[in-house]
Length: 217
Image (cartoon, rainbow, N blue to C red):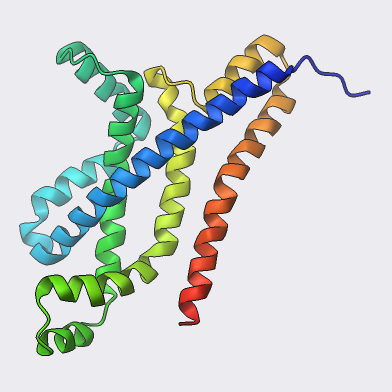
């Protein structure tokens, strides 16, 4: 007969860890997407030469492993600058910049996928640059960029497991704590995987729904 030492309180502890994972992901993806749109538009408008300094900074966040970024940021902001930021604040800051670095390239690629003929037609009709971007470019670019953005959001959700290094107890860290205490790794990792699935599945399905809807327009 199946027997386990897992209690309701332990399950609630895992649920709280899942809630922290969702919180960090939502904050980081939301702010990172806003910054990514700004950076992506700048990259597209300025071109590869004039946007080289920005591209260099973004490449840093894309090239250095996230674990190292978290450790360095936590040590620098806390030990060197003595800002007194919590681990959660540092985690959200680093993940936001990490997300924006990838999102910027997704946005730039989406904008470049919009045919120039459409943009020229919009400008010939008297649209300003802002109207062209708002009514023509961004709606079409969003359709192109959505699958990549969904993949990025899900990737950030899984990468949030690394924030344990800055003293944030998210889902995977909560699972590790219980594994150490209960010594039931298979059961706990199965539950942890189920939580991750329940978090990511609605996002993936919603993205698929939008793709199907837009393809029929």
